[in-house]
Image (cartoon, rainbow, N blue to C red; front, side):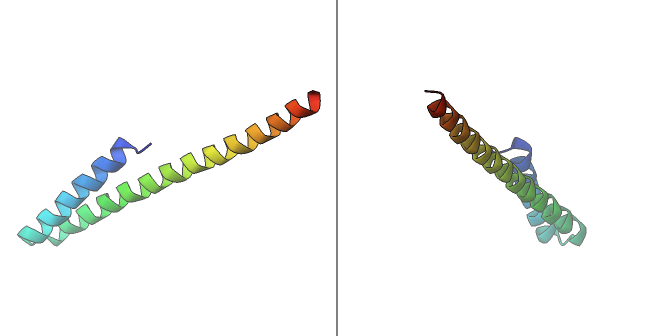
Length: 72
């Protein structure tokens, strides 16, 4: 599941970056780039967390299934 704040940072960052380019503001362009990257990194961290949770759940289910078969 994607984080809403990540998406907002990416969109807002892109808008600021482009606005900075249009009006010739290096500071606004940089601020936008940094905000966009923060959103991208946050999204990647969220994706990694979800992947790790899924792998841990899969491993736990396999262990429980093996224990259930042993008990029968």
